[in-house]
Structures are given as C-alpha cells and as structure tokens.
Length: 80
Image (cartoon, rainbow, N blue to C red; front, side, top):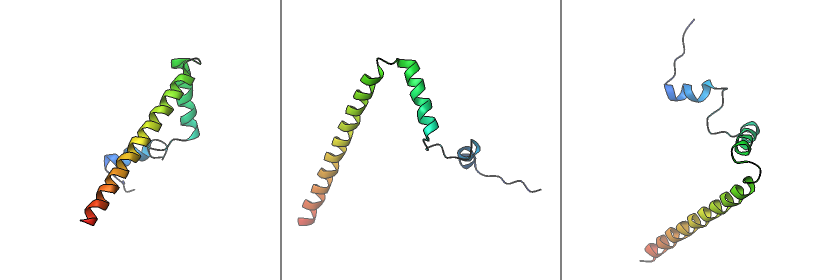
C-alpha cells in the first residue's frame, strides 16, 4: 500500500472532520453561545450584543467612507 503525504497546512485543514477551519456551522455557533452565556451570564448578553452590533456598524461605516474616498481620488486622477 502506498502512503499519501501532504504538506502540513493542507493536512491540518482536513484532519479534523474534513472541514476547513473557517466554516461556522450551527453546532459551532450554538457552542459559542453557550460558552458566552456561561461566561457572562444572561444579564450581560444583551449589553454585549448591542455593543458588538454598534462596533460592527461603525466599522462598516468607516470602511464605506474609506472606499468612497479612494474611488473619489481615482476619479480625480482620471480627470487630470
């Protein structure tokens, strides 16, 4: 029988259940939720969710503004 060898990074991605490390299934999301519930308690979770949502919205807004500024600068360069 012939042995099949792959480089370490490829093997690391597929050895644990055959899925890549970046996938978040419903099981992983539930596990994260249970851990957060145990760690912070039910009173703090809504506050944490609200703060996380605000942070994500601010990040998206800043990203949009940066993208718009870059596009505007590209348009000005094309005019010249």
